[in-house]
Image (cartoon, rainbow, N blue to C red; front, top):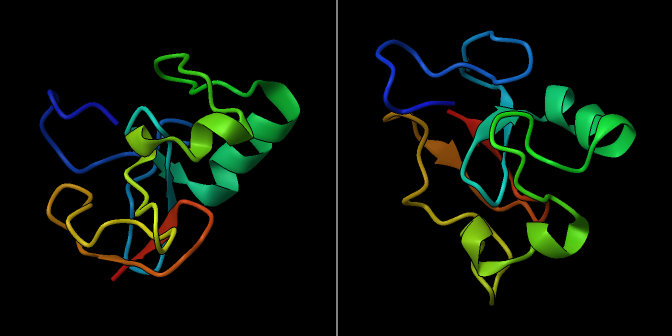
Amino acid sequence: MDRDLKGPPLCGVCSDTFETGDTVRRLPCRHAFHSSCIDPWLTKKCARCPLCRTNCTPGEMRSPVSRLNRTTGVLSPSDSLEGRILSTGRLDNTAVII
C-alpha cells in the first residue's frame, strides 16, 4: 500500500481494495495486505514484503517496528488503514476492518 497515491487502499498482492470484514495483515514495514493473500506469499514464495522487500521472518514480525503492543501482543488502536478502523485483539499481527 503506497500512501503517496490517491484512491482507496489496495492489497499489494491482489490489487483489490480493503473492504469491511476483510482480515488484514500489517508487515513490519507497515505495508498492509489481505491475510489470505500475503500468508501464502510469505510461507511459500518469499519471507519478504512483496512491495519493499523488507525481511518478514517470524523474528522480524515480532519486532517493535510491527507496532504490536509488547505487553498484550495486539495491534495499536491507532493503527488504521487510510481512516478505516481496525478491530484489534489478535496475536498474529492481523486486524479486521470494521
